[in-house]
Length: 111
Length: 112
Image (cartoon, rainbow over all chains, first blue to last red; front, side, top):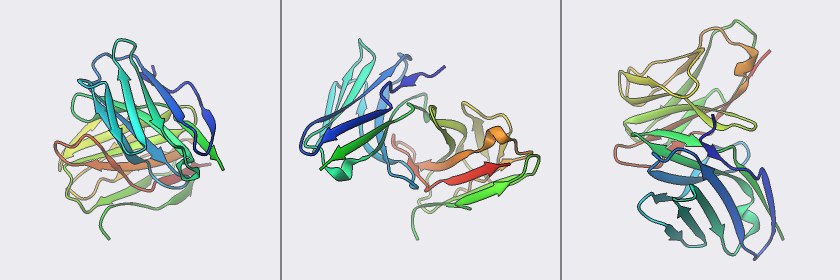
């Protein structure tokens, strides 16, 4: 039973445009949400996070939005750069460090 | 070097053999984790540890054993490897009060 779902396996965007990556979850107990970025042959690296008490968190070009009623979060990257091409994982946690990950979305930013 | 390291980076073994994957971190983080990454599943938690000598099962613990005698090390053992355990394994660590986890580079394990 996958509690965190990323329904788009891939996304292709032109350089300079906005990238929007989506994530849905089923467990209302999740209280913290994170996005990780992963390059080939490397481990995931933390990108940005949001607490369940907020609906938006911004860090430079990256913004995460949380809609608790819809159990949906999204990551916006503006403007997108070729170096952003990677696999992005959505994650959600509750009860200390029990973290659940989505299957990932491969973002390709074309020059 | 500071950080979190995994060894080996690549391993090929045969069905039924015992395999141990190593993980070492230099941050003195309390929490350590083992995940496996499979296509279509993302990362799934195998085991985690809140401190030395404290371990707990994650989402997919069957077929795996862990130990944590020292804070900095968290080895993962496959006691009798099966083909379904072919995967990329990631170790991660996190300090008390931190929400983000820091991942190692991964070990690609192939079970023939």
